[in-house]
Image (cartoon, rainbow, N blue to C red):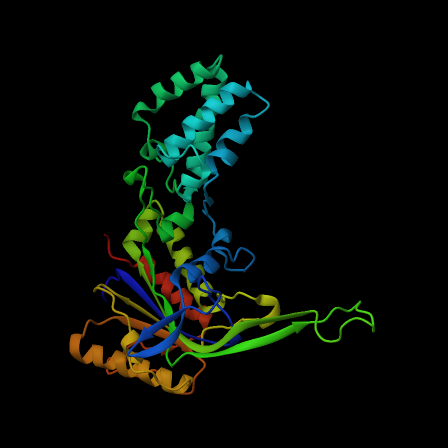
Length: 380
């Protein structure tokens, strides 16, 4: 048996009369592929909805060993400086505020507008808050605080924050990575790679003209609607693709394979069940994967998006057949030997010449199998 290094997750999701992901003009995001305009859902949109699904039974936040993280331009303000206010002289607190903003966000960190929206883990923030509190307690005035921070910060960077924590940036950074322009050594490589989802068929969109009526309008007032607006609604069967670098995930989880296995288990649930929906009240854009194929192997991953380079009909059965055909062609050509399992609501089976282990499972059994691949993962 091949010791897996990568998990590849392919999905087909269907949504009707929805506006899942908008561009800067308020219209659905789009992508031209194979000379055909498609509807698109950005990877950022997908990842955000998986991250914030905190009430779901399989939320990442419910994992044993979860370490919290926060994304903001106000991390120092809210998590480091706010606890000092009222306990130390105002001048000392202001001096520490400026010094720590620059320490974390770089030289341009003195103003909120110029700061990078940064992701820091709870261990990093707790460490910073403890250092700020220690310096404040030992400082008589603002100048003393500035001097103390300058002396302390000479050899202090993000590496110092991580010395006593397995996941200093929190679990979200461990999965999706982060970039810190003020300190490249603090960058975390993302082991979870997410493609933009797109419709397997041509974009299907319609302008939705809608009105709102004033319930308290009097008979003598103007007749008709009080508000008239227009939005765009789309329908689509979307192909999605996610890759998990297992050694990278285990490394970012501090070497804890059981935590990494739990992450894969819950993340696969979220990919299948959490919808990237906006306009919830007016479109109820909820859907679950109608197909999810998970592959485990040791070779460089490859998307199956080319199954839909030529747009097909908006039809699940045809989409499954196309996916199976592309899989078969890759198997015939490359014979890379991935182990596979899948779920599907279609009647069309997912066929491949290398059908060994290509079992059709329930979601529960499928994600348990995926999690088991982490425990059998090859070392980095």
